Image 1 (cartoon, helix red, strand yellow):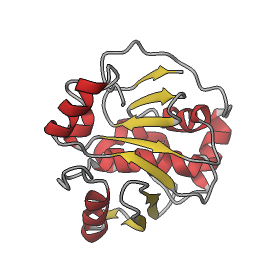
Image 2: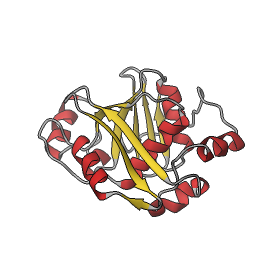
Image 3: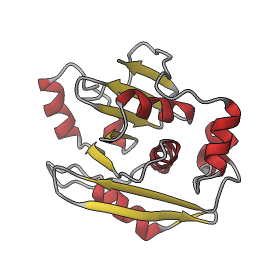
Image 4: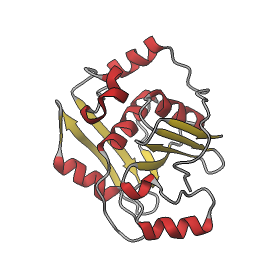
Length: 198
């Protein structure tokens, strides 16, 4: 599925064209702010609000989640546990801690897209066994995938194009963003800042 590392970065934010002022205005109007653990990457979001929310559904398990996971500078442990469980490796039911930075990137990108539609989660955490199985079937799966560290998610929105979702995620300047237009999803992670795909 998603190649996390090793691809040549490409810069492409077509689909959503935002000036710096429009970007700041969009974030100021949302309830998403900077993750304190990644202050450099999210510095321009600081002070944008008091609440962070994440809404997703899974076509694999039929589960849905719509949770406020951060209020007034504090992550809510119960909400984060719910997110960890939701983003589990559905093939093995293995649960891992999802990196807070990845959750914040997902939430911030979603708010930039100005839609109430929840993300469709295709892949969150992957156990090493699942990653090896997927790698044996596809060249697009990285050997050291950030999915295995709970630092990546593959997401889709029916109301937004791959290009639009990727542009919103890339605007956060906080991690990797991969476009998989043929499979109609975007990879987001909290690794090094880079972009790839078509």
